[in-house]
Image (cartoon, rainbow, N blue to C red; front, side, top):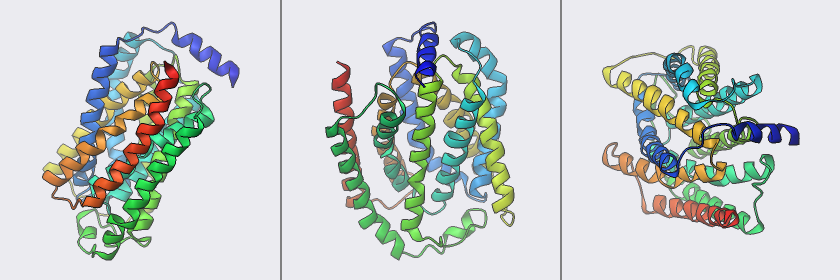
Length: 331
């Protein structure tokens, strides 16, 4: 482990270092795009099964990256990714994470899903504490984790409890023949959904430790192909009776998610990941849930209650406590 990190850090020192302005612009683009994708994912599921839709997203994204990655790799520098990095990216960051997200968004409003995902920076901090040398959490940061989990508990006790009681009979017909009501119940769906940021954080920590000096473009390209194969394979296995109905709106959503929400943002993210701390980049989650909630309410006419805001504030307060301490340690 120590040798791998030392070699990776040595390789990273040979790569061009971006300016603060370039990193800030990249983070801004990621915030806006990822804030919008929660609603677009849900709209793109109309008429399509979730695993199949996620698989198509990454297959299209891989096609674009197949054409773009060699040119981007020459400009950014870096070595070809190892098989372990490709497996980590494809299985964890793309396959499992997005399989869970797409499946859960069949049942959960996009705004609520985005608010639940806001706990990602706290999970990322724990994953970095375990996997990334030099990014260990202090005792006070665990207080921030508890505060954030309190925000999640608030959502389970209020908004998710209300969804549990509400009828979901209209859900099934819209989303590729999915069941009208999940067997796990809405709270069960939300609990499974929370595995997505956990899996993503583990994959990102692995890239942070072992991927410095690796071409982010090539890593994304290869990881997208593996993720697409896994998701489409899972769709063939678990969604054999689902219907596939392609509409103009659905195709626009698929194109946006593939090219803008995947090719652009993940290339920016894993490029920036080599030059910034994983926990710093996780601060993107401060902004994206607010954008997602605004879009869900104004465009999607989704139910957002007072308690949604309370839960989000609790999560973000926990993030602020944990990440604020982390930033002071860097000074």
